[in-house]
Every structure is written in C-alpha cells, then in structure tokens.
Image 1 (cartoon, rainbow, N blue to C red):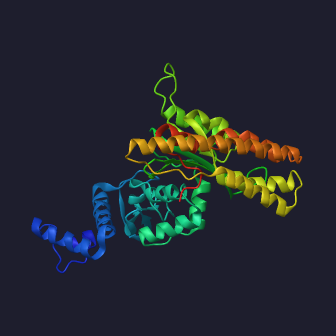
Image 2: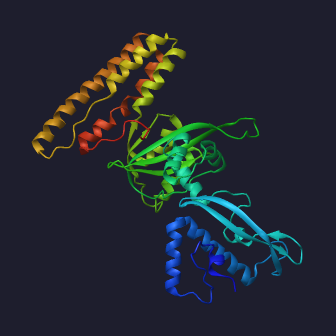
Image 3: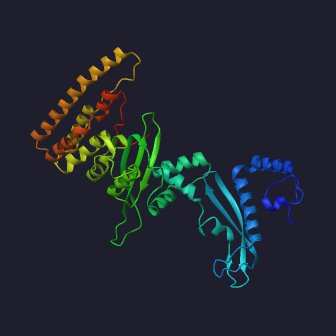
Length: 380
C-alpha cells in the first residue's frame, strides 16, 4: 500500500502508511501542511486523495464507458482560486478498450481541459469589475490574493459571460446603474462595440453590494429580471426595491429601471461633464465659453449637507435652512435654463430642463429622512 505522504502529497517529516497512521499523527501531519503550504496545499492533497480513490473505484472512459484502464502519466495544472493558486497533479488513464486517454478528475470537478481558473474565482473577478475599472480590479485582486490576473484577462471573461449571478432578491437604500463600453469579438455585422451594464447597491452605511453585471442583456431585460426576483405574485402590486435610483440619465436605462426605486437622482458629474461637449458640437459654442457655462452649472448643483445632530432643535434649524436653500437652488436652475434659451443654446437648454427634476433628490431625501443619497454613479 502506498504511503500517506504520496497519497496526500504532503511534506511530512516522516511517512505514514495508510494502514499504520493514527489520528494524532494525522492531526500533526495536517497542521504541518497548513503551516508550510496553507489552504491551497491542503486542497491539493485532498484532490490527490480523491483522485486515487476515484481510480480505485473504477473510473469510466468518457468515450466507450469501459472501466478497464491503466495509468498513463500525470497532468500538472495550476489553478487560480479565491483561496490562492492551487497546484494540481492529476492522474491520466488510458482506456484498455478504445485506447483513449483521459483525466477522471476533470469530469468529476467539471474542469475545462485548458482552464487555469476555478469558476468561483472567475465570479470573484467579475464581481470586482462590477465596482471598478478592469485595471483597478486587476490590482485589487493581486493585492488581495497575492497573485496577478491581467486586466485584459478580466476583460476577456466579461466578453464571454452574459451575467454575473448574484443575490438580486433584496431591498436596498440606493441602486446605482451605469454602463460602459468595451471592445469585444466582432459580431455578424462586423461591429466590435460592446457595453457592460452594471447594477450596484450602495447602502446608507456606505456598504457596496454588487447586484450584477451584464454584457448582452438590455436594460429592459435587466429591469424585468430584478422586478421578477422581487415580485412574489402578479396579483400583488410591485413595490420598489430601492429608495433612490442613481443614473447618468440615459433614456432607455431610466425608462426601464425607474420602476425599481421611489425616486431618481441624476449623476451630477455627468451633468457638467456632458454639457460642455453638447454646447460645443450641438449648439456650436466655443471651447472656452462651453467650459465656462459648464462650470456655472456645476456651481449650482452642489450643497454641503449637515451631519445628523442629536439635538432636535438644532436638527430642525438645519432642516428649515436647507428647505430655504433648495428653493433658491431650484430658482437658480430655472434662471440658468432661461439664459441658455436667450443665448439660443437649444440643445443645452433641453438637456438641463429635462434633468432638473432629478438634480436635487439628494437634498429632498435629506429633508425627509435626515439621510442623503449618492450624487454620482461612481463609487470610490
């Protein structure tokens, strides 16, 4: 009978035969393994043991289903997982009947022949991307896991998947929706343009929880999916799952997802960021003038809100002051829109006018509840 050290691929100080080792010896051996190789080393040892037991029980040939086979070398593979990199040494068999070679463990563990990652690690990578850029995600994973994953690899995973499956049945404080373009494999029309659509829950305590990320689904599909996950019966009126939806104002996005929240906040960064090019290329305004007008809008959008106060009288004073201030801010926005109209900047005027009812949701929510919502779609 083979030794325990061979069965478990452990660097033991002494080798124990499977028929000889005691429970205490096993504990010492496992502790030594954890001390030297950690969890990845233990997983490797466990897989080698399972592999040997699988072969002993009679592994079935995937081509002819025969259970008669002989050893035909080993396959070495390094897999990236959420617990670290695991070095696998898997037995390869050769069928005595059809002469095909196969690795029993790849079928048992549903491993792709050329895969270099576990599916749960791919999911972890995609969840990370749903909250930040590909490059930042790659750095974050390297800092966390201790091994590198190229940002181009994360990009490729995204182009090959339709959705990251997460828990989408929950009530949240704020729901942030955004999309970003990326290059993918060309479709039958020759286009390589793709879009990653992302939903993120940003709670009032600052906790960020990814809802999901999609590369092929439409905003309509996503809205219907989230609604169906949180709507137990068609006989009951659907209740919004979020307090506030924060978006960049994309019409299709807002139309399909606004049913998920009680209120809507336009991303203030996108408002000023998109106004300047709109003025330059639609209303044909000079660069300096466009930047000047964009900065004027930026000055009208932001208000520093006070922290929660334990003194109810102080809180009431703050609330009355903010109520007066928001009236002034809304009036200033109307005057800004009229100025755009008078200068003949029709596209810019329409852009701001269509958004004005969602610009100060963060202030209105603070007045109602004492808690504000995010003002931008980017979470840092």
